[in-house]
Length: 279
Image (tube, rainbow, N blue to C red; front, side):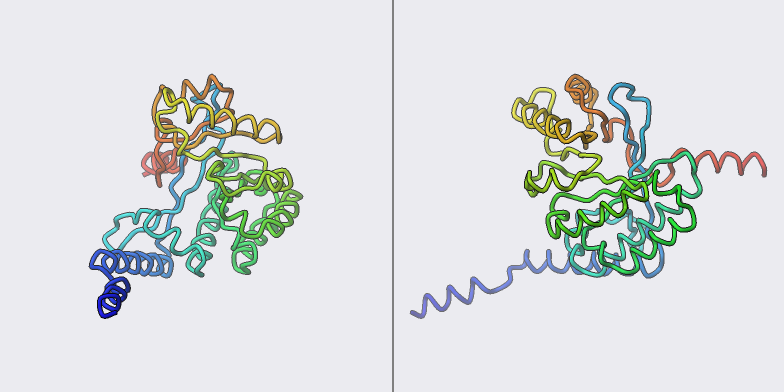
């Protein structure tokens, strides 16, 4: 009996590793909160290219970037899942949308996708940012794509569907992000009516010679075609992977092979060059 009690105590004690992980998580979330309070968050822009003409950029994705006190970018993996259900997650969505809409307003030829959580649909500040921008310039909607992950969309599918129908009337398109991660019911996939399906990057690993990933990717592309959705392969990192994907007929590709996310996209560089000439 005594041995069992000792075992129970040990089972509930926090190991040094668990403690270190918990402290790191707590620190990273605190740094994210501080950066948001001080308006230090930014977007990094990554191009999405068409498979038929890899040098042709269809649109950019704006990815949130948050610096720590030293200026180092905090990896999203260290905080994004931890803040998803917190108000911090909503504030991240607000900041990403705010910067994205401001960028669209300043760049009339640009099309841009911004990530959001389904939880933000009911968040007043996020809705206010979107509504105010569309009232100021109704053309922004036609150049805005909102990306929702599979796991997020399945939290409140009916709410997401109603929101999408409302926003579709304003020209906004929707992308189902990380498709293939396993959360979406095919019944809901039919009802959602997403415009774009982004195939999860896990299937792109060594896809040029990985038979299982090839079969799964082809199946996901077929699903996109069946539901009349634009298919995008994520996390494409090599010429060989890109060539194989081109042979499947996937519409677009995104990944480090075509460009890393950058806070200095082409339009910012052009503005800097103009400023130098004027000076």
